[in-house]
Image (cartoon, rainbow, N blue to C red):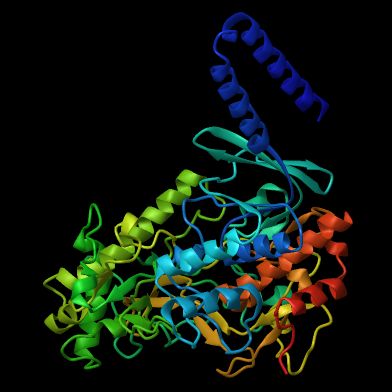
Length: 571
């Protein structure tokens, strides 16, 4: 601190000397330089109670809740877009497993959406410009410094003393900025702040034996859900034995074993059949229809099996989901298909994303754009595609009024999973117990989504005749109980906490302390927004009380959350 003040004194002294020698007759220029210097001082070494990294719904809720309780807050967004998957990604807060479980700031946003459209029913998935405006409305009602285009510096981004983060460094077009705070919240999808700060973490799948989880690790082969047709296998190779693109060589690892594979990422496009609001699906740069030879082979098996003799419709290949609660009923959310072996999820394309440099991540993002845009280009234009399928796809186009500045394509890649911190306690499949049976004394909200794991890998395996056929592995959907039904369950505070021995002033509401199985129930925006609201309130209590985040009073935190409309248990 003394060194910083010394540097400031030297600069001020220099400006005074310049005045004496150069600016005696130009005071306005000196005033401009002094004001510029003061602005630089404020923003290059800002001191806050709470700094939140990532303006996902979790980050927005954290910033708002801390500011409402009197903390000075900065919300740093690495990109130029607010709202994460809820706005820049296109899905809103649609993935709510049980109506009535969401309160607090998430519900406030939903109500603002309803007010905009003049309806009394909840609008979970509005037009993206509406959702963005309503998040901004909530943020502008409190003193939060929202700063866009502020990714963490890729090296030396965190300054620590013992287990405390003193400051973090972001990088923008004008250089590095230092942000000081008493408490930090990492609300990003990637968990970069937690990783750079030295939190223990993992990614991929734990072995079944690690936490005694029935659904953990590599899954059994030939799962009929989200796969190729079991009785009409799809070949994995060209006639010469070379593997098709978008499939890798087996064999598959032992069932229940651990790996570092990630479930499929994708883009959730806003599509419409309203021709007055349509733009065509884009042909990606460098498009080569040969890259979709596996898709071509799959379509052939679908026709020959008589599943769809004339060719499958678009809503077999992908889910065409109603915009949830959207009153105009003319927009759809393009999601991967439940019954199709080849769909809009880009399988095996996210390798290197979690720990990659920004340039390496951009390469992964580019691969996903090519895959999703190429998938739709192939289905809508390739002469090998059955005419009925092409006609079905070409009824739709991208919504002309969404993400206009980004050629109507969602700017946020759907990063379904990245790293997960490993805290002193880890939330596992065994903790997914309905709130009606287990009421936790440390609950900070309610989860209500089932265990939803998308395809993790696509492997060429030997069929009954010895030839290589395509098989998707890892996908599953189960409710919180063993059947398909989902019940709300309590979210414990320890989800947010790194190990005490590592970090005592960081909270992590997105990349939480959870196993792969449990995370795939937590990983939806209605849950994230609740965890973010709890993190913001806990950060405020830790900052004001000068205590470790692990020592925040749960009772006090719960009292605040309930007063803010958050539901802690399900009756």
